[in-house]
View 1 (spheres, rainbow, N blue to C red):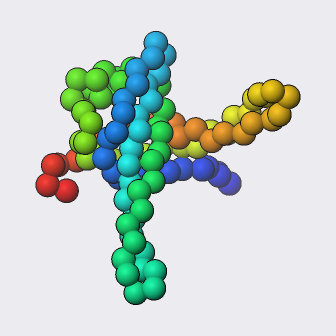
View 2: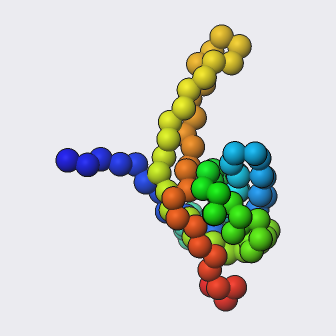
Length: 104
């Protein structure tokens, strides 16, 4: 049996932060639902971590704020201590990245 925690995001690029060993990309994904007969739009911001050097180079050269992208990857849980309290986080680790057409 093979278990895995995966994600798939399609959205628009916000900020791109480049570090020595990784890159962090904020991606806005919109969703809508009806509440009391009215459509409500909601934006979720997701921060994706890229470790692959080729993907980092591609993003640095070809991707900018507002570009429409598709990202797939795996979830990684982390924990650390801050002020004596345990803090738990889930990182979105990029495995596949592609830029989508502007008309999408």
